[in-house]
Length: 133
Image (cartoon, rainbow, N blue to C red; front, side):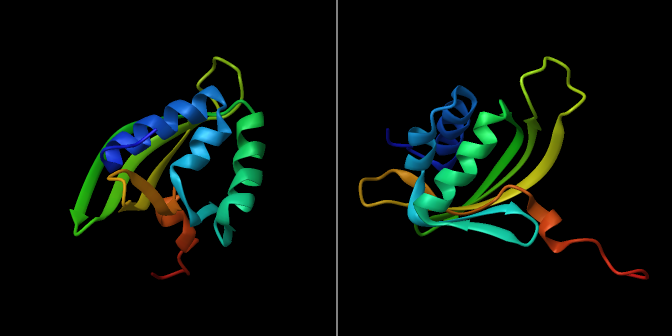
């Protein structure tokens, strides 16, 4: 499946994630992609991404974009979003967590878009500020 824009890639990726379709999810990442899995930890390449997404998807989590913005130049795009992760299969929203994501997409030779760097945790990767800052 070819994503015709970064927004389209995220739409298709979220749909596949929510349906538990790991192969389609992985198809929206370049082979050398890097994903921030938690502050200070990265998954690199298809095998590590497969392991990470398998673990998250087995928990029954789902994702929903709340607001997005794309800045694009010369076949590279910075995708910014506010999104919600619903943890588990329960219908309660008590476990929902909202994040600010920053993802770098690159246009492929077939015209589609794939993620190269996916920081779905956004500024959380910076950790907490020292006192006084």
